[in-house]
Image (cartoon, rainbow, N blue to C red; front, side, top):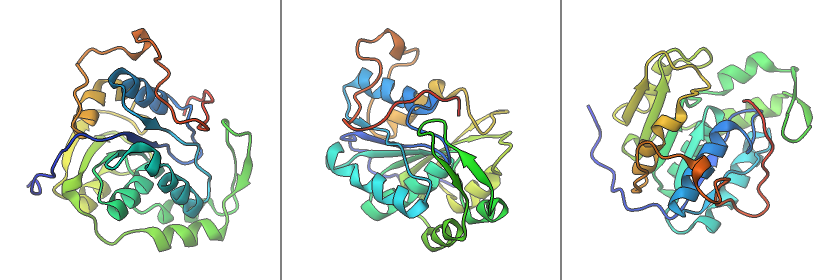
Amino acid sequence: MLSAAWPLSAASGVLYLHGFNSGSGSPKAVLVREACAWLGLPCATPQLPHRPAAALALAESRLARLGPRPLVVGSSMGGFLATLVAERHDLAGVLINPAVAPAGLVVDWLGERFDNAYTGERFAIEAAHLEELEALTPERVTAARYLLLLGTADETLDPVDAFALYRGARTILHPQGDHGLAALADYLPAILAHGGHRLPPGWSGSQRPGAQGAGIPGDTNRNHFG
């Protein structure tokens, strides 16, 4: 059963939050910028720090540049952060294969080292990551504000967990879609429609002048297949 309809006034901009150890130059971030450029819509796709609290603080700092009612979009760990931003600021959100209880994943990574292809940073998962995620994880959410986009064959996160937390949210299932969801471009019209904007089916950002997106100055754009 769907929750009561969320008022879909036209979003004043789009904030896209990438996943863990990904970046603002990832294919999803690039596509979101292209779609926003097509619509002439302000867009921010910041390079987030690996520490959850710092990532959330940076995400929230971008809101003021995006007008009074931006749409918040997030993928994987970015979906977790997008939830926090949407709940704190009473905004609509779109979540792509979101991490629901990321502390449960991170506990298995304690001590593991990662390299970020966007920043060149090397870091290890520490107890502080786990503590911050546990402190930030919400017990409940307002499901009506969200659109969920879930791959049914996600090899990293179980979509059933997202169904449980966001029960009643509008949901699109991509059959056999994996965690990376390479078909994201096909769903961008639905994503932007959740923010009250019409992106025509069959649009092609690469054919539009300024196709790299209406980015916010200071945001990075490093290519990475993640």
